[in-house]
Amino acid sequence: MRRSSLPSEPPTVVDVGLLSPVTVGHDLLVSDGFVLDALVRAECALVTAYAELGVAPRQVAIEVDHVFGLDERGGSPARNLPARNVDVGALVAASVAGGNPVIPLVGMLKEQVPADCRPWIHRGATSQDILDTALMIVARRAMEQVRSSLRIAGERARELAVTHADDVAAARTLTQHAVPTTVGARAATWARGIERALARIDALAYPAQLAGAGGTLASFVEITGSHENAAALPAAFARAAGLDAPDAPWHVTRWPITELGDALAQVLDALGKLATDVATLGRTEIGEVSEGVGGGSSAMPQKQNPAEAVLIRSAALRAPQLGATLHLAASLAIDERPDGAWHAEWPTLRELLRLALGATRHAASLASHLRVDVSAAQRNAGLTGGRLVSERLRGVLVPLIGAPRFAELLAGDGDLAERLRALPEAAGLDVDAVLDPSAYVGMAPWLARGGADREAGGGRAERAAAGAHEHGLDEHGPDEHGLHEHGVDE
Image (tube, rainbow, N blue to C red):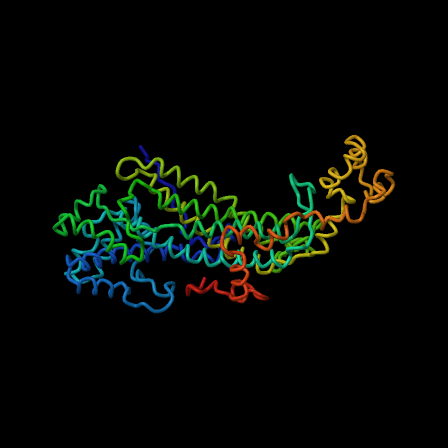
């Protein structure tokens, strides 16, 4: 009886983001190379922690660090990956058998260190200790860049808010003209969403993970010789890895992952609002804003598409489902190590980080180059012949002419100024003044200048506006103002 053969494997290709342009050039910090780097750093940190407690010889830790380049402190981490002697492709292939890359990695690392160091590689740890810690290392690095780009976007939005605090525009509710607002008040809304997301990032913790096979630290009690040493080991491990000390094992209590995912979703929510407004207000028939760079069309040379807004929105639309996957995995973290739920986190979290890295960079560029057409905003505010201030008119006219006649007055699309002047009851009204949208913007200019934020946040708006100038965000794009401050060439 002939056995059917398995289909041949397709050729392996590197994912360069052909169908995800929002991340192209901005996701090096979550690449396979950086994940591998973090795994190696975690294994080295464990040896260092043993040495710090006097359990392992100090020379062993020094030699292990030297083998993997951790004593080479200078230069960009992108050019100085300690894991450069590990074949990523071979590691990926070998990880299938055990369900995670740590199992084959340990063998590869032991082959590279002197014989007297080998017993200390991965000693007492479980794969989840190393992989969770590596994810936190990757996340912390990536979030530093996300925060840097997001800060620039927020500062630029604040600057736009102050600049256009008094420039009248039509507020829109359910897609229709509602009441007057200002361009600056709208930009301040963008800024507040971004600043709230920044606060969420600042509140994050990045705990290391070190708990042993079943989360009891039993192996570390045995290795270190006491409960006291075993209790001190996770904090020493965290210091060596550049992370926060864990309060307790979180093998199946996945709040570090879900809180990180929630913060990333909030970042992309805030940027999605900015991008959606820019895309809408940039429509040909509206024309109140336009992107300052890019946006060509393959078929229609007259177009300038809102390309960066489109890319940001694509990320914002994907983020909630990715965040939900992290919560689902956390809720199904069965027993003392999940059977698949934990594994589902890895690509999900990395994709969220990739999207945030790309979207924040595009948002910094978008906000830095955004062009506001004040005259278009004023023109649009007058399209309904004065009806933009209907809310105000109702309070003035209904007592004079009654609700039915007021409704008749607003009917159609004719100029309200002429109709008002024809009303005997309105003879004493200053028609031009009562129809002036700039006289009915309420507290929009105050909000645009950060009034509410000054009172709530101790001068946050002024600090943000001052920071925009301090970082040189006057006439240049974000690539010239700190987007490479972490030494990463993307």
